[in-house]
Image: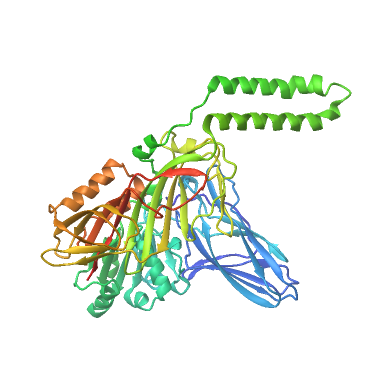
Length: 567
């Protein structure tokens, strides 16, 4: 959703919101020669995910110095994801840092540009506001579009004039991030063929990883030769102008006099990822698998009454009577401490420590990129937690999800979700004696693949680390094959399957486990594609993304899909 609520923040040093990304200079004491500049490839903040920032600090003093960028300030109700960073810079040197600012979660009706605060030597004006441009969209269903600077300058004015509800950012490709998470909030990105062909390999890989999560991409080509070169980068041998990569679409458009109109016709029309998250409801399968938190109402009421009596009249008139009121400084903390111990003991007796949870996975295998893209929806029920901090694998995106049992407003309970500069998650991602839901996504290096050997009696060799309970294949000609109990490293013969076996079985897996929203969207959109495999496993091994270690997780099924590697 792009509904705006701009806050009045006075910035001594103004930010620039124009094509070429976002640029901001931190106001420093006039007596200092130090400087801090902030830039981003985006000139508009996405609706979900992260805002990539590049920090450049020039420390011209004679001593080592350190500056900090502090979390978003919570000025409105709702759940927040905050992060903080520290930037040490040696004396007389210049240092550069790339960070991802997490955006506010589950509260798109009240979304605003993130406010950050600088602290450190000689910072004169600490407040910093990320950009947010005006638009007339009032629906989170509106996709967030991205155009390279060249296409934005050439076509955006006409596109927005024809449809004022469109929401976009221009992208300075020279600053394009090499972390796939920076593209989470983008639903469709546009660039010219030449821009893609000259794109650095690490940045191209990050964008290709984002494609598996629903970030469509489209290229404007000057001629058919450029279109052919684009196909080659995606290992296409045909002449089609549109195909799928994972759960996303790739489109080619030949430049002409009506390019703007044809861009408009190809603009993504489906729901945005922000809508899938905002409107998310936990799958009924997970909802039933994780027990509800029971409350012993009468016992809680008795505890509150007794605690009130002891902390009030007993404390005031017996433990610290008139003339000895100074005892309140001792008795009140002791009473509170004993009350906390009683509550902790009650939670321990009823729920134990740690917790239990269930998770569902969709794993996309990318053999060409030697990557795995893992999406995981999980629900947990906690008891007494001695620690709520966890450190997921690098490059992981964790998003809190609403409960099925409460309306959107009741779920916005001013929770604070924090991420520090080391990648440690803390705050209220997990709380004692609470039901909580998360969407967890990660990209990790892997040589996993399904190698397909064609012929009258085709076979496969799996290098996926787990045994596949079921395997369905659509070969390059669209023929269906199947196998079961496929072990890694062993050649397995395939047997013919019904023409629609892949679609029907995969759809049934999704229906049986009642996948919802973003997980359902990506799992469904990989169907049907030739030269693709669809598999399941009940023993996921190390595929799940680990979050809080003290929770005992079960993973009843893992869906795995990806392109075949042809021998």
